[in-house]
Length: 188
Image (cartoon, rainbow, N blue to C red; front, side, top):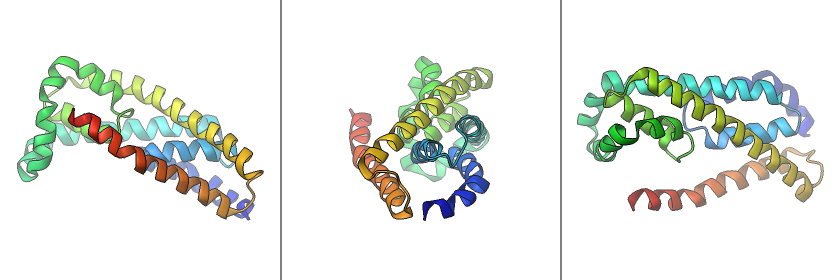
């Protein structure tokens, strides 16, 4: 039954990866690696598309912050409080914010918007953000690929869509369970 979806994933999968990477992309990058393991997507193409999608997304969010950041902050006080906490970090550790945005849960949108809002140099943002995205994409897809291998050991050769959906749901639940841990670390 899973074979029935292979042509569909092969035809539209890279587009889904591209648009998924324009936002957080944590689950998307891992699922992409799993799809690469099962041969539904090309590993090399998926890595390139994931990098390109994340770059486009992060540039978009940077410019949203640059040109509309103050207006957005004035309309959303809770967001303003969260971004205000990062203002000193932009000055002291802007390079690390640009590099690590994709590695930190909720950082893929928050960090570029913050760096744009506080006028962080665009060339510097682009350089370090690109380096971070390349590392993040390769690691995330590799992790998904490894999870695909592990899933095959648990489920056997995945041939039914139900098994694949179960694997994706397990990943989503794991991310959902781990999220409070990262949120509590942010508050410390």
